[in-house]
Image 1 (cartoon, each protein chain N blue to C red):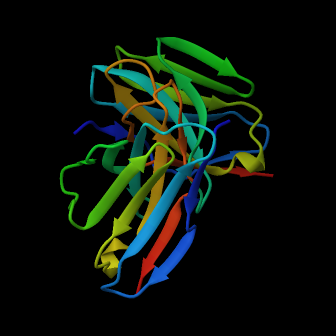
Image 2 (cartoon, rainbow over the protein chains, first blue to last red; image 1 turned 180 degrees about the vertical axis):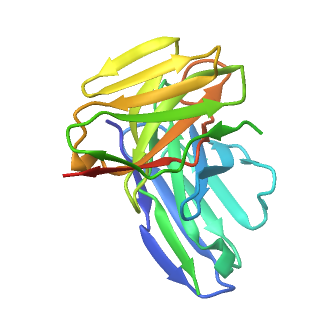
Length: 114
Length: 113
């Protein structure tokens, strides 16, 4: 099946710094990227949806200035957590689709803000 | 906001037994239904998708959908310890396809040897 490569898998950062998470589609063109966040023992919550070349659409309650999403190419989308705080510690997962009937998850990024 | 509800478990079954996982959803216009398996610290992997009422079988897995009752289930036959994971039910609307999904909180399954 198609592969979505997400990096880093784990990151620890200091409070107040920014962290960038990358998702690359390795063998298909990802026209749409979904970004999710999952807190321990909770469900995946959709944060935003981005289409290549367009501004991301954020879900209610998600701060667009804090969670910057770039989807400038059909193979790369990035999520930057700006001015991270301990409450931003979570598991972040991307999910990409090329507009066909399938979508594929990245491996996830465990962010810990200390 | 659409709601997808699952019993958090854990559901404990002995090896070789049938595990039955249930999910209800609130949005009647939902069209596509998915079961994902998620191991601790990993991203979800798709187990089954189902779009029409009835049963759909794939190996040891059977998905059942009842749109009138807004209910979808997953049966795992001959459960193995490697099936121990959290199973997420996901729902989307607006036609078939892997579009915007709403996930349940997941049911943790424990299969004992």
